[in-house]
Image (tube, rainbow, N blue to C red; front, side):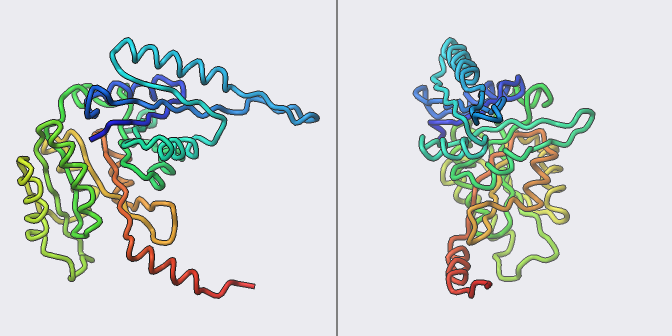
Length: 295
């Protein structure tokens, strides 16, 4: 599934720790890691306008990481440029046709909640490819990053967009021989026009079982984020695959309270898959084109 993975690094042990998670997601021995680091301006000469950057240090750092990974049998190449971190990550993802972006998060000292950070949030909202978000190994419980992926949780909401998370979940499931846990959380404001939870899960489950994967179908009610977290703990989930939803007419992606809440509270890696409602997007763009501009 993932043949070219982009990993942003900032020079910290926290960001490098994610590298040990990546090999098990790679599809083949020929898979490649693309290591990206955004160089920063260190000082500016007020009169000449000349500035000093850490580009040389960033390039040397990535070269050292490349050599270390090569010694472990992994193919990697580093790219360092002077740029905004999120802009560089997204541009390199497009230019290099990566199939996955992997980001590390960290928790506040003394707290279990994860700090996503502005770069992670922007990448999640705009990424053209799935984004793996994992808590750094120093802060994640050892048993959660050492064990194989055996159970993959796919929260579903009854929409076609929700099902877009199913394809990468099934491909990952085949890679590991994992069970697919399908969860449908009924909420009070549920659209009466969507299929019944049972019919919806039956359709999703049939796709998984057609590919030889075992499934567990769960219907629950209550706060979606809380139920996702509860099911994740109770069923020993090793990976959560969730669809994020796009706001039509805009390039940015709106995570929504459910996805954001899960990302901030779980220690389980989350694979976020962008799901944009293209029909609605086209409709709003059309309305915007005919809108009367303000004077």
